[in-house]
Image 1 (cartoon, rainbow, N blue to C red):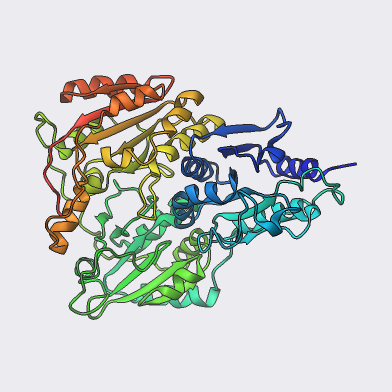
Image 2: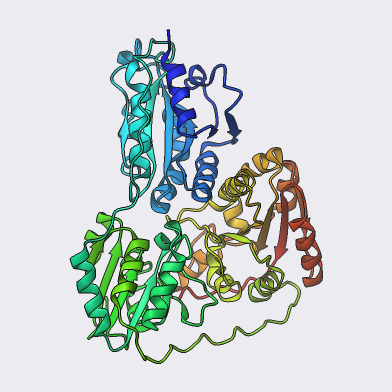
Length: 533
């Protein structure tokens, strides 16, 4: 007799989902018993870290990853990272144990009372099977749902007494397409508008990187000879930042963003929202300058529906870029101006963020991967450090802290498992570092070679910036004295150093890139409060 337990593991094996991230609990142990030798369980010390590690791993591999959480409390712990996975468009199958069916009526300890409602609205599908025999097929539906565009997490609540029940055969393994071609008539119309445009601009977003569409986006930009901007709050980089047509990052506020677009008669947004704003700074003429028309290409119907302006075309962004390029005539339009050179900042003690990131940029490995979470200094980091290759930048798209540290661990694991072995560097502020430091233990246990660069300013500097913008003086809790970053890191088994000078940072960073395990470099920086925009 084949049990539900056996049928489920057979299905996961057939789908290639043999790496599982989690933090085990009593309601999950019946599922995890006799854990198969050909599966790997990556232990995190807290559920939010487990979800974020799986997020990073899935983004690198491009395949769904299984995360196992502990009923309602564990799901609650993981919710912040689940919100990020939703905004990152990451295909995750999140499962959680449920109390035994025979006692659920009485709501014993650890019953997930409204299991399917708990993770909503930040999953694509949430389900608790009506019968034990439906569990394997529920996994198959979860897989198909997670990978279809827009990709995202799904959630299954699984009663602990289901696993020894007899299965009704084996689950049918199904494959589903993950690319949807845009409407040809819509492409014709967009191409006609762009061909007749006097001064078009492109805004190229994260979906281009997720779709492996850098070459198609570059070809489109070069055919149009149009300037290229990066949208606000991008979690991936969809266009090479050293390309002569790249202009920089758009600011995340209505008025300042509209001002940047002044002079363009057509703006084509590809693979991004229109637009993600924060804080609220209204524009004099609304969302766009007068006389500017906006066109939008996205794989997400919700993203198209909520755009406040413009005409949207649904479909795979890589296919859309290629199809538009084929439809557009060549142009003799002058090439857009290149970005001004970034001035170097002389190192002092403590280092300024500009000086620290300038040194980091000069030492940056050619195939390096950046995982940033330094909100107050992110603009400076972008100004100094240029992303030149696809799949080289992974940031949380949700605005919630605690993603970068565990995600970097998952990304490094995936680099090792896929044989790419690209170096992974996470730049995480000392405040952000505290949201998920327990992920360092997993990094040390797995011996993944991640370099964590921690600018230490002993404050929530970005909140001080918001306090200035919002005219809210006297906000408590914005200073962070007494944090021993190297001590925390060593306690979890990582190599760690406190850096006192530019030369010391250079030596330590080079050594960390060659290490066989994780290294944390805490770097005191100046405490100037940056402006938000």
